[in-house]
Image (cartoon, rainbow over the protein chains, first blue to last red):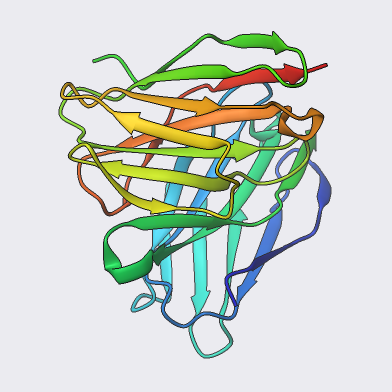
Length: 116
Length: 113
């Protein structure tokens, strides 16, 4: 129930293509769904995030689509560039015991390669 | 403003040893969380501290401990190191105990030999 399943594991697209990364979850108590981008040797950087009462959010070339009934959400990268080559993680926020704090549950990641 | 800073950046330890990792949050951030990222996997939650109190603990053995200081910096301690503890240890800070807008540091790469 605390898992976030992410697919595909890896993705190769041409420059200008639109890679799509998908995530699914079971726990309906998750209340915040961020996407992180990670380059080798660096920590994850917050890219874009959405709450479950919103079906779509766009920030620049990045779009999250959220389907609450299906418990799925996805990241679309418009006009992808070689500089977008990185590992992408979806995550979901959960309250800890007694709601004393929160934690992020991460998917296993998608390695994106954008060729020029 | 400086981001989340972690030290050291790399560390090699022998099985059975103890290690202390350090984290300085962004100025004004009162919550610090620790995550373990094994190669090829997503980060896994270890601890959250807020206002110097432990707010939560992930599924990690008691060999892992942490604390937060009055200036909101934090240390993660791991005792009796195992080969499986080799990972990137990430610290993230946020303004409050909710993790909306977490900022991660670049991590400490721990190798246990």
